[in-house]
Length: 285
Image 1 (cartoon, rainbow, N blue to C red):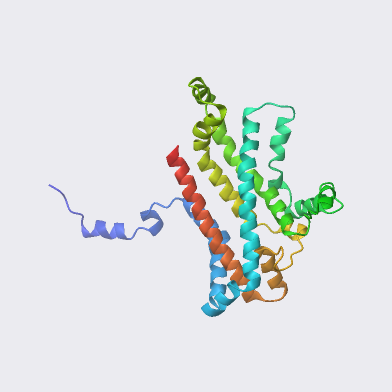
Image 2 (image 1 turned 180 degrees about the vertical axis):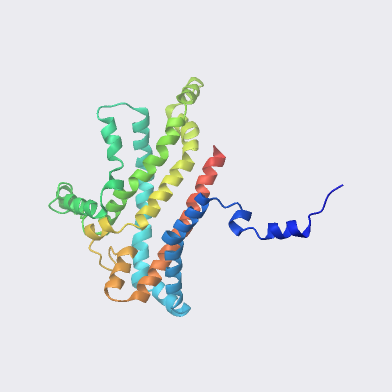
């Protein structure tokens, strides 16, 4: 026969602290507090600042010709750069995993250079190399190709800073792939091309998409290197991040806040897409 709880026992249970009732441990509390200070509060402040602008004014600023041009330069160039890195990142990761060659460890370490190198230094280096008098720019100038201080230079900077994301995402997946599967496909009569497209590539697709998405997100948020290698001229090579800074220099805080909010919303959507891709990859495995 079940024994019902007494009123005293019910009162004692009801008086337990919220953290104790939900079994919130101290690591959870520290994590939530840190994220609140470093992430949630700044995001909330940006949204609150943007809410002070009326909907009509918000839409007017967010869809102004200069802003639309900056979105186009930012997102289109980032998409192209991440797609190119998706192709060459697979090749680089494949060579680093499957081949042994002199100075392999040095090459593998250099892949992480965009992570450690200050973005301003990266921009200065790229601008020097790709200028009309630079090592590469001087070779392209006779062909009528100008890189530095053009939209093409923005793409080069995005390629530089987003490459490691694709390579580092693919390397663990390639290392876990068994080469015996490829040999079995060859023994069954499959060519090298058929083995790549039907055996090797399908398990790599989730990792490739994740690496490309991460590189795309990084390229969209880049500022330091692009502001040096580009001319930052509206309707030419001005990116959204630089446009926000220009609005701040003009004391147009409402305009900077609106454009920053648009970038934040798009970034949140991209991060959600990345999480979906990662979940799909785990389910695929």
